[in-house]
Image 1 (cartoon, rainbow, N blue to C red):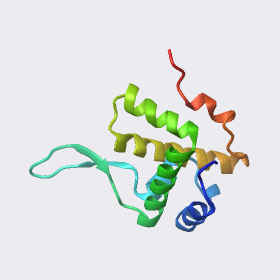
Image 2: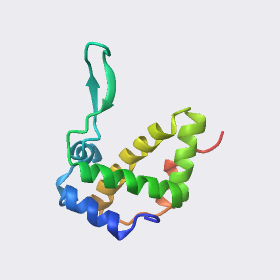
Image 3: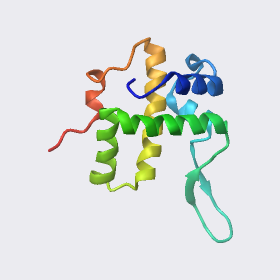
Length: 129
């Protein structure tokens, strides 16, 4: 993947272990503590937050890798712009949504033994109407 360097790959593999053990990207997100949880206390009721119950270094490197992809990879740039402009997400919300997409892509690449190509990923980018 353009923008996904060997340091990020090594850090993610160090935190997650063998990616073949995960059936879906959601499991990788859960391992990193990036799954959604409800936060309730006396003052706030039912706010949805990131659980942060997982490997903090894995969470950090998935986040940093996604930021790097948004900066370099044109497909992820378009996805981020679509989320911010068309879906009216805050930039940080869009980044965390793309972290989930990166996790699903990584698990899919490992299970299918394929490399990432922009031709295969062109269906990810919503077409302008």
